Image 1 (cartoon, rainbow, N blue to C red):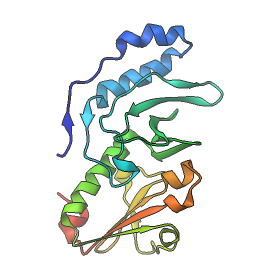
Image 2 (image 1 turned 180 degrees about the vertical axis):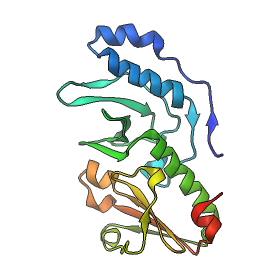
Image 3 (image 1 turned 180 degrees about the horizontal axis):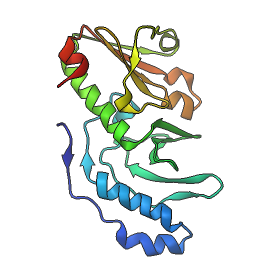
Length: 195
């Protein structure tokens, strides 16, 4: 509901050049499939990662058979120490000092943004916590929200609250001080689950 489609950039015209530069055809096909499905989707800013990519947009795959192939998922909204990428297994993540998958797929990233937008409208309280306070969160009684396909990041649903944990920068930048959690409290059934 908060995303809009803008004209997407065609990447098919670059395929011959990419193959000439040693990129396997199968990896180019992955990038083209991503662009066909997600290219041109402008999403609202994410609550973390300085808002995430402005517009989902594939580009030339990079990597090797040994390390795996990744391709860019879209340009950052602000200057960042990492890029948003799609990994060898289709995971959506960040490429900083190391590859850090955040969600098992782009669907998971988009679901996470949709959940953040929804719960941000309905929560009566939002508490942001960082560093060691994140590690001390007690998730007993909470269940993971499967739609976000969380790997490094994730969402948990409780009786009347939702918790989002953002661990990607802490892992990818080797910066534990970047751990971040958002606790959305005093939610009713609509706030917890939507329609």
